[in-house]
Length: 215
View: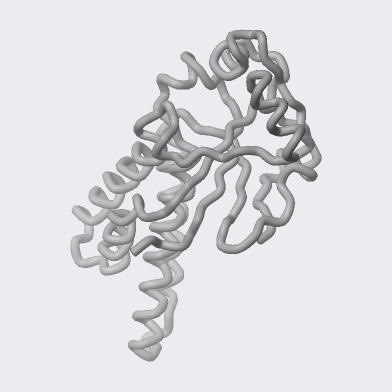
């Protein structure tokens, strides 16, 4: 599956800070390790963004309790923990003090520069690889949420009056899944504002999501 790279991150270099053991492993195996989101230092990884999106959905449902799309999207989000995310962090800067301290053995480690077009190539199976900037504020998440909800609601409202009910139901289900999926995906790039000054200071974050839902 082809990776997703924003235009501003194509043909650029990002840096992965690590200690000597990690550097040796990366060079020897020609691989990077991704960590499951549940085992990162931020216990609210992904959860914080999902909870915020759930609040946004609840606000819209309070305004329009009969909207079946929003109700289905909220149910979709309730199963967000069944999506498996594996994360690896990068930084746009090759010499960031907070990164040296937190990830590179307090300055005795390494910052490995990697070209994004070579780093993120085809992935196997059900995994989807994405690289994007981390947001520490709620406003980008809210703006994106409002945009996708309004766009899909407009598309549904534009369906002809004589549209077959089965087709209408399919469109509604598809819209709900798109809203829920967008919320979960974007939550992988949303962190608590406290991390912007204590550790990360605008790193990039690469996320691989296993879309196979565990039963």
